[in-house]
Amino acid sequence: MTATPPPIRKVIKRDGNVVAYRRERIATAIFKAAASIGGTDRARAEALAEQVEARLGEAYGGERGMPTVEDIQDVVESVLMAFGHLRTARAYIIYRHERARARGARASTVEATDNVPYRTIYEVLRWNMDHGCASIEDLNAIVAEGRFPELVEAGEQRYEDEVRAAADRILERLPQVRIAIVAGPSSSGKTTTTIKVRERLREAGADLVALNVDHYFFDLEQHPKDEFGDYDYETPHALDLALINRHLVELLEGRAIRTPHYDFKTGRRALEVHPLALRPDQVLLIDSLHGLYEGMTARIPESSKFRCYVETLSQVRNAEGVFLRWADQRLIRRMIRDRWHRNHQPMQTLTHWHYVRASELKHIIPFIGTVDALVNTALAHELPLLKPRVFPIFPEAMARFRDDPKRQDAYLRARRVFELLDPLTAVEDDACVPPRSLLREFIGGSAYTY
Image (cartoon, rainbow, N blue to C red; front, side):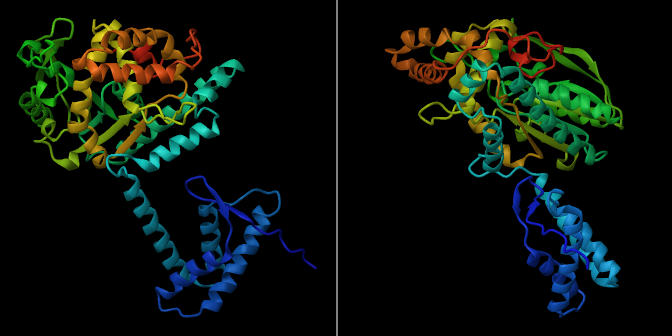
């Protein structure tokens, strides 16, 4: 007598979640396929589902592992054909293919409600919980137990995987796509992400040309000043949008151009400096704060553009359950980078941040639901490494701006960041951070040239 195969109890869904196995779902799928060609025999569908279950038990029962949804569908197809239900098998295969296409179409856009990608945030939180780094307390424990290099390795790999997935979506749309845009708010890691997207595309044989939109800033003296003498260069209108559009059209038409050159230390630009051309088989890669702003690429057909949005979707909370704000994480990054890259003191960056936030809330973040890919650039290991580079600034800022009614924005931001970082264990030694890490864009020591 043949032994009954061990039962299947669990199934791995496409998103990685494990759920209970249910035979009736298989029977229903078979019945729907049969019904699409005129079938009405539910009992036959249930009998075929039993055959599918038997084969699954032989392959995956007991300690042999769990089947995925795709594994089950493969067995359904083979059972239908083995028992002579060729027309039903064909209908099932067509239905399966159409569902796959529908999933692909949904995956090509980012789901966002009120400009918040809740599904992605949940995935970030789950990753943090799985890796034991969802809170300041968790991070302190990791440092104390000597597991910080392991967290660095895992965090870097997660980011690399997301960048690769975004680049692969661009490859799927070639040769229709002519311009790939990496956009996002200030200090979200656009430049490093753009470099890594370029590396992946070149690995796959795609030829790329990069356009540095920062060179299209108007001279700083042309921007209006506020009551403190500060310039608002965060608005997209600080860029020569007309010249950008003209150059984009000329490049896609095969004409050579000369882009400007902007010197951030002097705040001035020179016209017609850098030669640039784009062949018909090449893709133009743009890294820009305002890459999603319609006016930047208004003269380019939508079908020719691919938009990738990057943001620090951090999900780290303090002892009171208050989460680190994404904008605060980017503020910390920018305060560090501005000091060594743009000749701005951290206090200047802090007091200028209200311009950054006002601009991104108006011209960047509202477009998150229109993009083709989303990359989370928040690294689970960055806060302990960033703290020693910037933390002393916040008590000083709190003392300086506490009683200044015109600087309450800076005071409140400084206090909020101070209170979150204060209990965090700092990590001085950054040797475990790879030279090609996104974090190196802000702390220095990168293998890339920025």
